[in-house]
Image 1 (cartoon, rainbow, N blue to C red):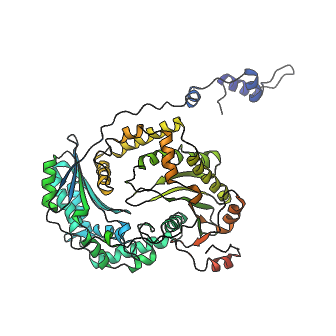
Image 2 (image 1 turned 120 degrees about the vertical axis):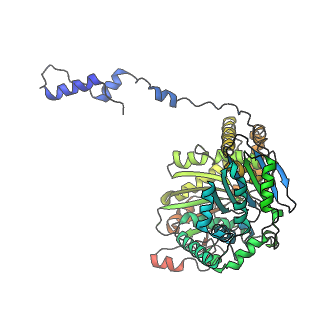
Image 3 (image 1 turned 90 degrees about the horizontal axis):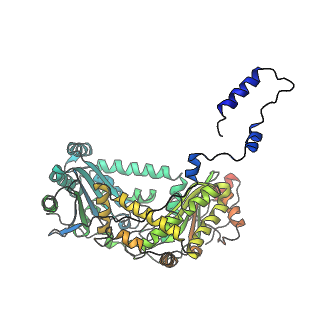
Length: 522
């Protein structure tokens, strides 16, 4: 509401304290006064909001191209020199992540990462942390679907000590029974707690529905059953199978390339794999029919978690950049179509988006959101409407320019620090990308047209074949979906919180709550 003028406020005060005379004219109500005064003057801030910001042409960006050296043992070194940088970042990456977990032992790569942080070279976890602190270094270990990574950064004069510490963590972990017992128990506790969380259940059901028994079918952290089956011997076998020929170290910072090679060769030059890689030993996935609709029941939940998607393309696909541009418009930003539709237009959700999980294999494309339970059916319809629209209609020139500017900005942001650059260059190794992947990124982005984007989208995305995964109140959600006649969904395949099909779907919980659920599809 606009503040009242000072003179008008004084007049109101005077009228409230002085008795009104018969011929005295009282002030008009604010609405009447505003109408008689004509349209209000536009405030400066309102004028700014009324103007659509211009998107400037993309500026040239001199992204790094790493130099590559291969050590005699097959370990590759990717070096990016930044002479003005006072920090040096090292990142070890091996192509052995959660997708290499043996069948029935999902979660192994993730727990191996935990064990690498539990102490190495005879030092306890606290002593390793103290050694990193003495260098002023940040040490981190993680496992993703495709990789296990160890990274640290510190001042450039400490490169030799950093290299030794990195080698201790990667090559000489303690792997003690007491540490394993603690790590396994903590993971079991985390997974037990996650069984009550619809977002985790929706992700698990979505992955399992898309990939069946394949290496991409499970979340990296594993399941309760698989983690309970793991033993310390499995972790030791995983570590022993990590090979220098399937690994790389990225160095970004102010140290010259020759000095980087000397330090890392001294630390890693004698390394040889003890066992064959687990990634090559895992059997290929069997071809299975993907269910169109899977549901995890969470009675009386006020929200439904939705995922809609299908397997996409690997990171090495020539369509990746084109699909990134399409995704930036449909769900990759706050101003994307999905978010504007579900949040701003309809008020169904606090946020909606989509992403491609590009990996060494065909990671999933997923549109996702959480919505109020009572609008689940309408929200699902709107998600499919936006995905169908993306396939049916080319992007507008304005949308294309906006998406290009957004992606170019994100590229610069991803390379702004030595640590971020090391992660990005690690992807060049991990996904077999060209060394000039980032140097040519903007020029390749500028060359894309709405027509080429639509061609790539139509090759990759098929909304009529996508899988819908919902974690929410089945009794409240299913009638809504049935009423949305345009969806044409089959009966749901009911699953548990770990994504596995239920043999006797929710009989006990349905009887206890007095709810009636439909018979699931076979």
